[in-house]
Image (cartoon, rainbow, N blue to C red; front, side, top):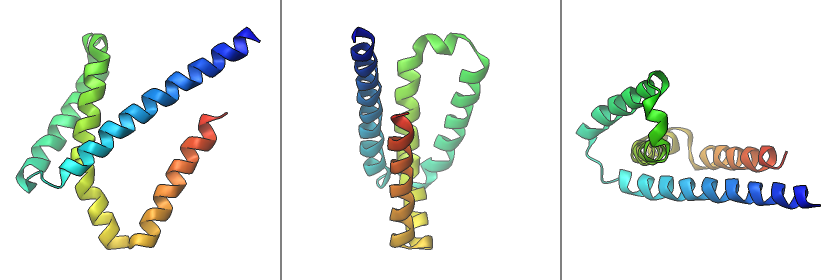
Length: 112
């Protein structure tokens, strides 16, 4: 019984962090509409360098929460343009079907 409660508590913490980062991502995506077009390429290159650096250097792991927040904010800022392009190119119905499919996948595989 105690292990089941500990397991539920662990799942609750994971879902809390998951929702926290989704909230940061959503806010960053909203502010992505105000991001000048000229800033998108340097931010993309910076994100790529940050990802590669975190894979190569061990010291980056010590600042995990900081790096996670930077990833989330930059990806959110850059995602606005990708979402708008996809929405205009594929149409609203297909775009929202893909969003529903992604959310469903997270929920289904999160409970396993």
